[in-house]
Image (cartoon, rainbow, N blue to C red):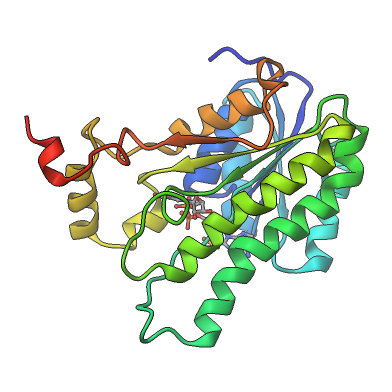
Length: 258
Ligand code: NAP
């Protein structure tokens, strides 16, 4: 799509690699000023450099989104580097696997903290600057896993991705008076470094499960986010957009047989 993001200041958490990098590249190509927030300085700066070399504007910030102190720096860094904050793409998430029977309390808590609590921390901390924007936008990376589908080993993960949507629906009401929208993209299986960690066999199974016959790219998610952040999507809030190549559609494996 041809959304003009010129002069819009955009923050992408987890923007150094994977889906976040794809989001950052898409917004950078659309003319946005992109702040990449991630844990590793070299990785975050590599993505920022990549966007600058392609003619865009990008800066990086090291911050752990589970740390309230770190998160407080995000809006300030966007204001300092890019003059404000218009669009927050809250994208960080982890997806370790553990069966319900073997899962420890620590494993459960870690996934809740990184995937769900961080959303609260980041949105709340960025709110004062988003309110100053003429068209503030929050777009988050949820998942099909949890809100629509299940997958063994991901009770903790699915709970967070469904929880994000619960957060979003009430936040949408609280943010609406400030003309800030909040929406979620729900990816299927997207080819990222994180997904590669799940192994070749997982990827082969998933490729067979996608009607469009391929895994998604990080840019597929970036384009959906760009739409939700665009002026054209200004009347959409509290909604979800599934980007999964049709993966959730078949009623059964037989439905895929041609
Ligand atoms: P990824 O390849 O692992 O990338 C995640 C990025 O977030 C990494 O750069 C990571 O840094 C960073 N990060 C992790 N914890 C952080 C923290 N506490 N503070 C700041 N940055 C942090 O993951 P991905 O596959 O792109 O997934 C991104 C999002 O999409 C997640 O929310 C995930 O649940 C969601 N999603 C992914 C898929 C998929 O198929 N890939 C499908 C559905 C939903 P380090 O590398 O230094 O750890």
